[in-house]
Image (tube, rainbow, N blue to C red; front, side, top):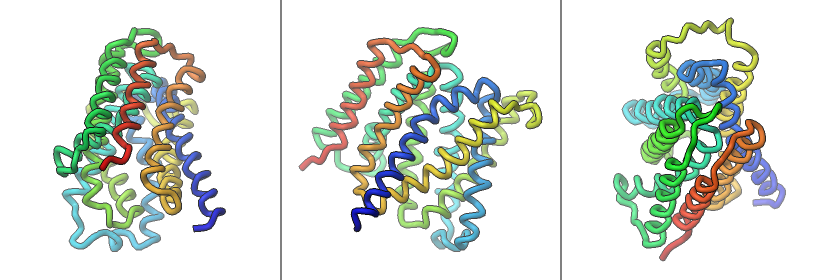
Length: 295
């Protein structure tokens, strides 16, 4: 590993972190022009248009395990794309970007808890303490919200945000089964399947919106999220993992929700309560504690 290569990897990592950190405010602004289900579908349609040709150029399905684990891929698509983005977009439709970012910072602790239940991974005392602290922090965030112009039903929105964390946790557990498969082939496949599975949600939403009626204020967030957050962000993240330890990358990724909170307050002029800030600090502290090495 060269110093130049590691420097490039850190640059790639921080670009990905900023892209994902601003995804909260970009999604929130986009939802003012496009209904939540249609927004999710169009976001992943853009991502699929970029990822699928790339995967096909690299060999397509031939790079997936044989026999192709379609059941796992469909479940990953359902949990990590369809259900996750339905919950994520609905959460941002009801609560603020900053509240959503604070709640989603609990993701590493929730995954650790799920890994204990389903994968029987060991839970050391330090990890248990960290998970407990993160959960209490989430409860504090959810319980201390007030409705305003940017959060019409914050309690519902925050509950949906935490549900999205659970959905992403399920996706992560499933993804462990595919850890040895070609990552581009897997990502392109679940992106395409997830996009298709979003179509019924759009039909149920029944919003009378045509593509031609979507203003530029709706298309810019869709393209940002599809091309950058869902496609480019993944490749930058993968590039960072070449030269930087996964545990260190995971620690830095926790900066994304922090950027999301700051962006929500600065860009969207969202208000945030002191108890919610305390809850966010508890969540980040819990994640830091639970991700530490234990013997």
